[in-house]
Image 1 (cartoon, rainbow, N blue to C red):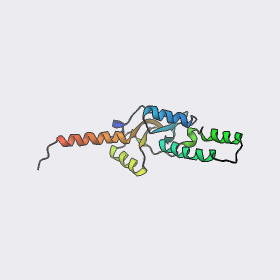
Image 2: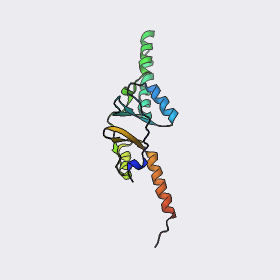
Image 3: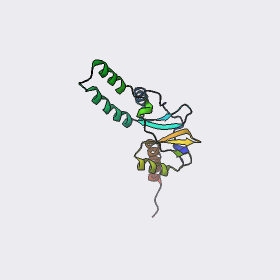
Image 4: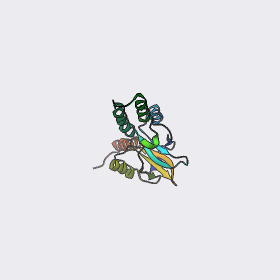
Amino acid sequence: MKVADIMTPKVIAISPEQGAKHAACVMLENHISGLPVLDDNGSLGGTLSEVDLLRHAELGPAASRDTGSTHEEALEIFIKGNSWGVGVVKTPGVVTVHEDTPVDRIAAVIQTHYIKRVPVARAGQMAGIVSRGDILRVTADALSWRSFVPISG
């Protein structure tokens, strides 16, 4: 079985120019934990995950606790700390696979890199995405099939 057999071809993605708050809302509304970040040409420039957003959220409150700031400085710190762009927060250097990659290879990639999803590339563009859930469904189907096959012995 190949990636093309299990991938989700219609991918929800985000632009690096969009705000992190918007990205978080997209993730929540679609019940997903990450988004590919695509430039204007549709090229993959990174991924944005819940972890990326949480990591940056931890940095914001520390800046706003600065007691030596004037009101204007505190306001500027708050605005900067709460209006990150996706391009700043994203993780660059994305691991991708091709449509003809075997499913067992994708499972190994996900485990090796500690990631939840792998973008599927075709000629430098996104063709789809494969998540741990997609692989788990294939595994569950295979295990269900095996439980009905009599074992001769």
